[in-house]
Image (cartoon, rainbow, N blue to C red; front, top):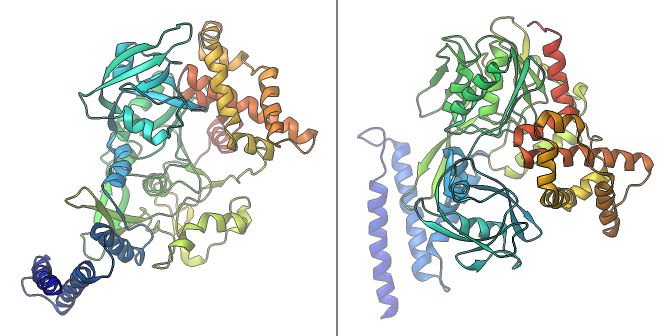
Length: 539
């Protein structure tokens, strides 16, 4: 009888499968042979799922089964078509939406205690009096310090719907008792612009980490502020920028190009071709531009750098970019999950396809491409890069030679400096010894540093990390069997620690612009950009 009821259930599910297949939308009223085959295959897949669910010997998680099936299908396509469940989708889209809901603090973890680096200006935490250096030890009377709680779980407890209240317990230096704060959660902006500062009296630098909904507005505001400080020429830093929204890239490109200039165009099999052109009248339509890229600059970052290069608006400096030129369309599911399906390819104004070659279903080989570039010397030796004549293109105004084949090849190649950071430094950094030391140092000396260095200019010119602090890092490293092999490496390690710690302290006293203003003093890609701009290059 039980078996008979299961067969009846299967029959019912098969009817539903046929109904689901009939609901698939096709382009013509009369289905083509291909569309009829698709309907049959959809019915087949649903039938198989129903049979497994009803008849398989062990219990089956139907949701996971469907998700595995979707992932299996997408894994046989290109490397960028992907499925994310509801939680993953929220985590993926949140940085691109430009905000999240929470208490509004920048923080770091010192051992297992949350230390506030800075409250977000005008955010909910600042409004109730939370200060830089405060330790948040409890949320809703539940301890989050000293209990080995994961960073993800701590963030989950601090975030919440706008209007809800987070009851926080806070320890503050110089105050014995635990302070209590009721913070009403609100929308917290997620900024794309990491840094915007004057690198010389006439050269500005803007660095942004993605292309989100708010990035265009942030970049325009940053350009305006730098112009007020005397900026004539601009460095646009897209190193390690993984991309984001196509429209954001087009909007930002319009700030540099003339009206009607092609920015990018797309071509697909079943979606209309699209062209994106500059609207003109941008915030930086005059003045020299240098764009910085590396092997992790991808997608929208490649659209922007490719447009500026092909239109002869500026120079690209660094290393060949990632090579992601596939257009994904987000397809929302009722449960909050999402399929990002590749529907077209990007092309630069000169006709170059940005996407690097790939083999469908060979995801691992594709993921190893950057490592393979390094192994064959491409990141360190420009002479190792060869392009056939078929991949040569011409820029639109000056007819300079540029190259296709995937990614944007820079006008000026700057090799990866694999010796910039010593092996000992990298090991110390991996153990968080440098970051933790900077947090402890700031925790102890914040008031003294604020008084001694009222301006960043004074800090940059005069501050030096104390020798005993650096010696303490080296000593702790030795306890963990991390030590330089010789005096030369020790000297280099000390130089590395001095630079990065100074940058971290500047970040905690001011913001990320000051951090980059410190560490970019030793960056060869930035140095090359400044050299080009100060030598009055001509395209």
